[in-house]
Amino acid sequence: MAAQAELVIAPVDIRDAVCQDLLVRYEEDIAARMKPGFELAKAAPPGPHDFDPPEGIFYLCRVAGEAVACGGLRTIGAGIGEIRRMYVVPEARGAGIGRELLSVLEQAARERQLHIVRLDTAEELDEAQRLYKRAGFEEIPDYNGNIFAARWYEKRLK
Image (cartoon, rainbow, N blue to C red; front, top):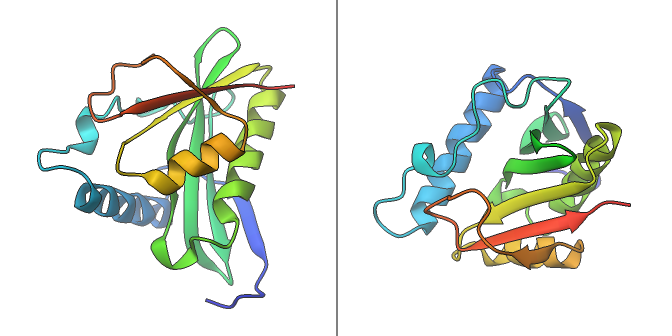
């Protein structure tokens, strides 16, 4: 992956084949890091149309044309959005892609008049927890019943 290649973050239909391939990789990566018994389908999964505009949106990130990250935003209540399926491939981590994607997702929430954004993450995903805390997310109680999550976060958008 070229270190100087431009990052392109663009909306995509989550059902797009490239996006689906990246989500398979996401599931495999997460499952390898989690305790035995992890099933993505039981991790408070989004509905099949939750990322469809206008209530939601899903992004694919590319560097030098290669899909390296993805993430989506869905509306879960009046003025409340949730970030789901945020993933950066291991070989692209540490380059600020997650931070840029998170910023784009927050802006998408503002455009949808969402004033609070929530997300959850597993205990094993230390780097995700650090990213969210640095971005201003604060830990909150369980809001979605995700049996595989250990941390729940919320950010009030300005």
